[in-house]
Length: 273
Image (cartoon, rainbow, N blue to C red; front, side, top):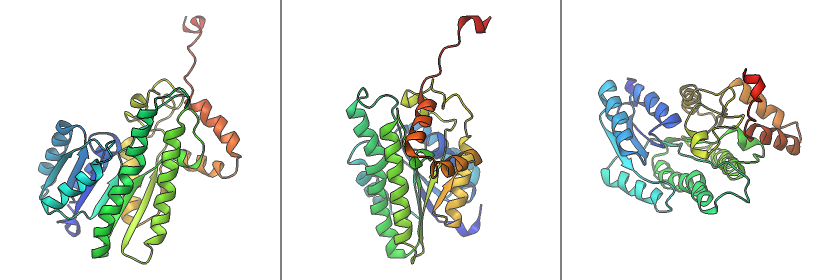
């Protein structure tokens, strides 16, 4: 435990698996108390109390919430305020996508994704940032994606929500440059989490290619957050991809991304012999 972090608290959304779980481990290792938010109460409890015992944390708070609900952000904030806990770091990690052609996908599901990926983290940021401003201290980490830099056919809504989060985060970072509050945006590439399966994209080329490990992505984001960096693209290949996206026309990038998000064709029977 790092003594300078004793008494500090981080709130992490989507903390029950993937990046969120790895963030929780990193913050706990460095002595931060935890507020873990997700829909899975049992997973949160198992993770939170294990980390509390392992790192001798003062407190772990478990908040069960469906962040696709418009009321959820305010409910989470009110519960934290009632508990009397000060949030020093906010990690807006929860997110989801849906795979398919936009004219065929379900609108209600996409509205829930926009709520989860954009409206909820924006409201959480607004509420907790106002408290941070009163103290002139705090850190915010928003999780975007490499698709923030390019069109994302077959996951059009997801890509658009992540482009929003990157723009939003970088604008806030500039607004806060004369304060002791920092905003960092993390842009991972395709990763070995449950994202593709939940999005209905488990059989795409992207899901079956080289995937980043969630602990590596979380470590990159954590280190950038602690340094006060505005943006971090996790992974050398992903960094190269974002550089290329600034040079290559969007139409060409869209074609490349569509190819990656298409399902891999079945192998011909003779190739399996």
